[in-house]
Length: 336
Image (cartoon, rainbow, N blue to C red):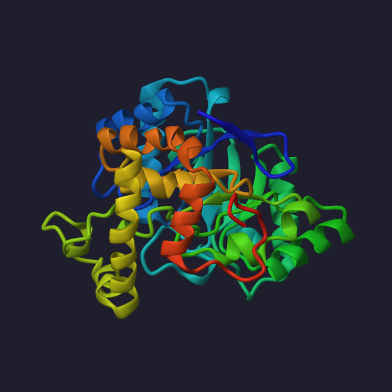
């Protein structure tokens, strides 16, 4: 496993990490969670991502029980939560958002569910236009100063919003965000490669990217239609099926078929190729992977062995198939 600094901080985070998402608490029980997380931990993963909203808090509860059962030293792993939407159905105004009240109470609830005394990373799970930026930055700063949070960050904030938070922090002698958690994959590139380009040096922004497999499309499992056991056939995932069946979704499937030939030539899976492509970007601090069984984790971890295979010729071939290189690219690939 490779370890990278989280932005300009001194925190060493594994290049591949694991996220619970909604599977923990819905599809994954504690015993299975222990197996999954142990497979990741044994492969060198030290970051486990979560959020208050995942399975309405159950994801954190399952992960917390799994951490206790695994018995790892607390100083050997990083655990996170994200705050915004709340963890209860039909959340009342004070049970959601980024007010100081909810930021504080959500942090306490997350620590209780995860069975930890502090959160290594704590994210604002999207912007909240109804709360002044100073209140958000000040609340996060207070949690850091109290030792309840070590690093705070954002998720899917614009570069402008991140710079505003940074400016507010500097103006009032507060602590700015260390990282953002944006979507990044072969089909979704602009935020990481263009919008944030100046922030890596200007404020030392770290990135904990999610959806490296583009909701599963980049695994190649939809190359020949939707399998019967796909989550797209489950209640509540109709939106995902509509996305896949849309014109853009089908275009992505067609592109994945072409990319699969590249993976085959390298002797790797399509998923491993897609994850390795994300790791290849030096501005990615860590790639959050997901799984509902330990065998998936084992396969995903092998992506680290693929990174070195992505030489100039392979990257050029991938770029020609994708044909979606954003203008004003913020980092230089081998074929740039």
